[in-house]
Image (cartoon, rainbow, N blue to C red; front, side, top):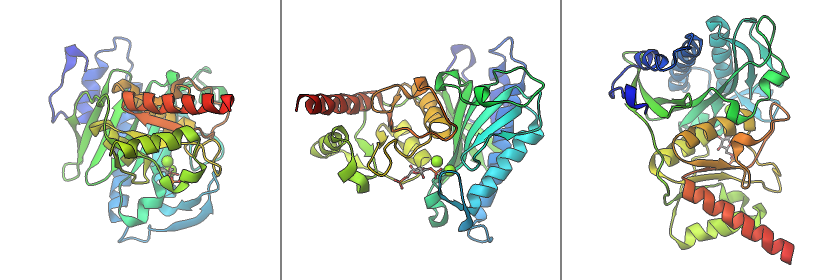
Length: 338
Ligand SMILES: O=P(O)(O)OC[C@H]1O[C@](O)(COP(=O)(O)O)[C@@H](O)[C@@H]1O
Ligand SMILES: [Mg+2]
Ligand SMILES: [Mg+2]
């Protein structure tokens, strides 16, 4: 946390954003307002999620999204709520969403920012009351204001992010984000309708004893990943896999651990999307002292070529990510020699 501005636990998100803005003499308040818009939309989505079982908003929506996945009603509701918040807020000109094939123009040509988002992460867990989330990345547009953003604005590398974060809708609802000056977590108090600083200056442990991977696809993992899973077992690490990226990531961020979604025969480029899952969490983990790679390269330096491109993900405590990279390299070298 910036030494000149250590704010106490219990500070409201609004006050935190306002005070942090003072760290940036040239700040114009637009990014602050955009963070508030995200917080507002997340409160509405949180309310819908909490009541999902009661209202007719559980289950499938009856459409497939651009990924070929069955859309859940809450995927669509969350998508609508965030798009509406960005439209009404006025700071965003263009949106990339997991639920929309093409970029969405908000009608705010003077908006300075591009948002890439996964409105509802962990869709397979929606109806079974398991933690789910929302993931977002914020970029400054490259093209001049006054017109709609275009692909050059949208396809920026992770290192260009001005902010990123996620909301986890779990036993409590939390917003965790970075603007490149450390990572802070805020817990939502529904009866007051406010987010309060609960996890200041989050740092992830250098290593841990938890690994998160869907071993159901073990047989088609790259050899290096198989070797790493065996290494974890031989060292009696704990296997934890919720099946919601945000939830698995959040646990490992706080307690130490590594989450791996490798390339498999079924998904040669992995399953997770670079622009609104991998880049966002990579920015967070790096700001918290951890690492994120595709097994070889730093996620944040990957050059995006399409809106919904996928990439393998190895993310978490730095020493554990390094171990995975080391084992992948070794198995590759063994293959070459064979
Ligand atoms: O069922 P699998 O193949 O293990 O995939 C689970 C992963 O897929 C995801 O559900 C993909 O995200 P969406 O739910 O946003 O599509 C991640 O949250 C999760 O980590
Ligand atoms: Mg997702
Ligand atoms: Mg999703």
